[in-house]
Amino acid sequence: MAKPSEPPQQLASSKGDIQLSWPRPDVLLVRLTGHFDRKLGAFMLDAATQGLAQHKRMQIFCDWSDATGYDSDVRVTFTSWAASHQERAKLSLLVTTKIVAMGVSVANLALGGALQVFNNRAAFESALRAAKSGL
Image (tube, rainbow, N blue to C red; front, top):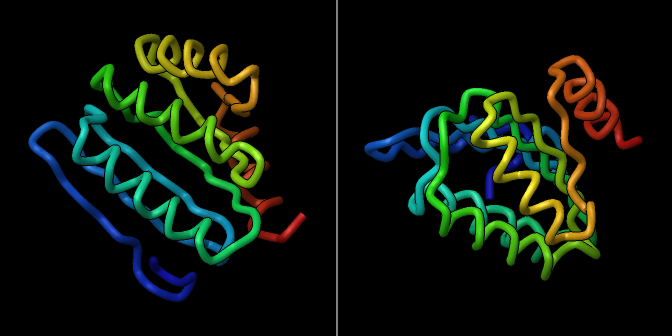
């Protein structure tokens, strides 16, 4: 797991790429570009799981505004992970494309509304700044 002073971790697949950074030890920022496939999903959830192993609580901010789509098994895996960690992990997602927003909506319904979903960058960035400040 990267520390706040370290450069972001990146991974590319044939369909997209993902960048992970830790603005605080208990705050993970995920930036996804392109298609969210199994390889990228595993990379993200592995990092989040490692973060939870070191911290009692975490906030995970997912900037998926540049996501073009996702594999359905990634949505299922993400939803399952979120359900099993929702007591300790708060997830905030920025989504702008209709297909990604639809998948996030389905996941959020299954999670009883546990996801904080944004479609406005300014509101997402404001929540991220608050988390970085420890508020």
